[in-house]
Amino acid sequence: MRLLPALCALLALLPARHADGDERPLPLPPARVEVHQGRFQLLEGEELISLHAGRGRTVRESAHLEGGTRSEVEVAWPRLASVRVHGSASFGFEPEAEPPFRPVLSFLHLASAEVEVRRGSVGLILPQGWTVSVERAALYLRELPDGSLELFHRGGQPVEVWSRIEREEAFPERLTSGARVRLPAAPVRRD
Image 1: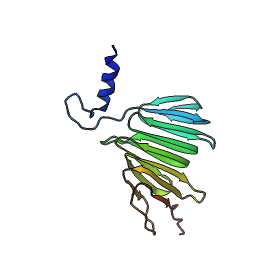
Image 2: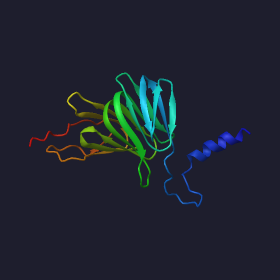
Image 3: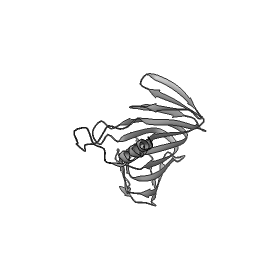
């Protein structure tokens, strides 16, 4: 009977395959949402749940979370990635509709967040029109008082950064380990 846990651990290290032997990407596993401090409101489908520190919930597909100033929550996909959000935040997550079915997190606002991707990739849709693709890397993000974002690449593979809106100033499109950049707030339209 001791062989079963060891066999399960070994199988988890093998590439994911469908029953027909194809190596196409498998659907995203459920996410685990854990509140570490304060309280977060979680909207899953039509169900609104209040999660307090020490409580968690498994989410199969998508959800939206909102928390206050002294809150901290972690969203984790086992063996793939985790995102820890500190302070006031409003964000959602869902699996991408097409392969590779990676998690995509959309932030309306955030105080700060730590992103760690161990396998595969994660998409981040950030405030002020910024998008980041993270593959096997660790990042730290924080929103600055002027609405701009600070992104610090803590280590791992380069990350891709691009703007969903037209901007006058140039910005780095590919960040390597150790890079720290300020992503400017969206330009104000004066019509």
